[in-house]
Amino acid sequence: MVGPRYRFAPSPTGFFHVGGARTALMNWALARRLGGRFVLRIEDTDEARNRPEWTQGIIDALAWIGISPDDPTFEGPYFQSANAAAHVAAAERLYAEGRAYYCDMTGEEIQARAKAEGTPGYGGWSRDRGLGPGPGRALRFRTPDIGETVVHDAVRGAVSFANDTIEDFVLLRGNGTPIFLLANVVDDLEMGITDVLRAEEHLPNTPKQQLLWEALGHDAPAWAHVPVLVNEQRKKLSKRRDKVALEAYRDEGYLADAMVNYLMTLGWAPKGDTEIVPWSVIEEEFRLADVTHSPAFFDVKKLTAFNGDYIRALSVEDFIAACEPWIPANYDRAVFARIAPELQSRAQTLADVPAQVDFLFAEPVVDAASWDKAMGQPWAGKLLDGVVAAFETAPWDAAGLEAAWREVSESVGAKPKLTQGPVRVAVTGRISGPPLFPALVELGRDEALHRLRAARERVPG
Image (cartoon, rainbow, N blue to C red):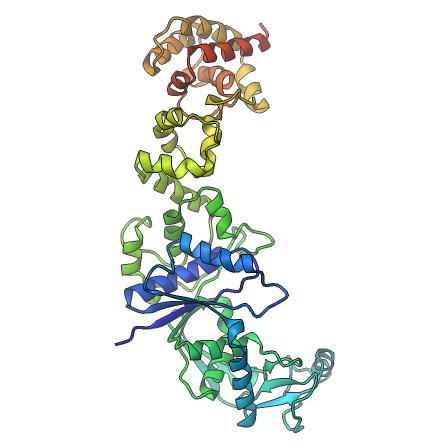
């Protein structure tokens, strides 16, 4: 038995949207679990906006989240532009069979007549004019006047559309080029696509596409429309307003496994008490019947928390290897490896890691707010004097340095949670960072004392 054929059909007009990534993953999970195929089709017919680098970006982004041409489930990429002749042939067939007709009305003429007659859109005004093909004439599909078109959706159930609300839509533009609706159906038909899973924003197009499938003599595929992704204001994610490029998260040091896991929880949840599960569990458990109808909130804070959990689950060796693309060339790899366990326990993204330890490899840039907060304490100068004296002879290990600091801290009569601040800012330039005493060990006695003395000179009193 031949398995189902799912397709993912993005347009190469920009960076790869996280919503598209979620749709691709859902298709991928079903294709793999059901022994089917995942077909990648690049819908590249918008010549004004398409760019080759966007196409490669889609392929690379899919590979990053585990959807790879190396897997036997994967098929493609195919390019919609290569099938243009078949799109036109299908339109001409519909015209020959009386299912489509030509219309020479301009957009302005249609708007004016619709306004005058109080209709919501094109009113089929050229249906009976008997026009043939010609320059500037669009080919329109003749939709049914009565009854309804029922879309059986695996997520939303049966969705009915009254046929008298579906206008006679365009198949070929006035210049003879096919529109998306026609090209999409013809490609799906020729590629043997059995299941179409996409975002709910495409649902209004579905009755038109179903009518085209039927007019071309075929049963429509199984439909499924998953909820759109929204931002914190519950507005649909926008490229102009929100950070939606999958590549941006990849380049900021989010782990692919974390991103995959998080995206699959948007509108669906695995069984059990935790959403953090490996892909093998997702693939086994994902069912369209369990997908919700409500818009799904793409919460960057929650994604970041997922990522932190995934980072902490790495072995130290894998964490160090994962950090490598973000580590500057001047960082001593041996020193970084020794401090890595402390960084791993706190890291949220890999791109954050270098800034946590840059003070180990170069003179720190002091953060003004951190300086004011730490050094503005009335006992800051006395504390630094005591720490300098204690660190000159203290055992240079984490335990010895912490014991020396505690003794000085008690002598100034301040709370320990405050007295680390001046030492940390003097040495690292910031009020927060990795555990102080292991970092001091790696920095070395001479450099640590140099920085402490330099800071003390700037503190009055």
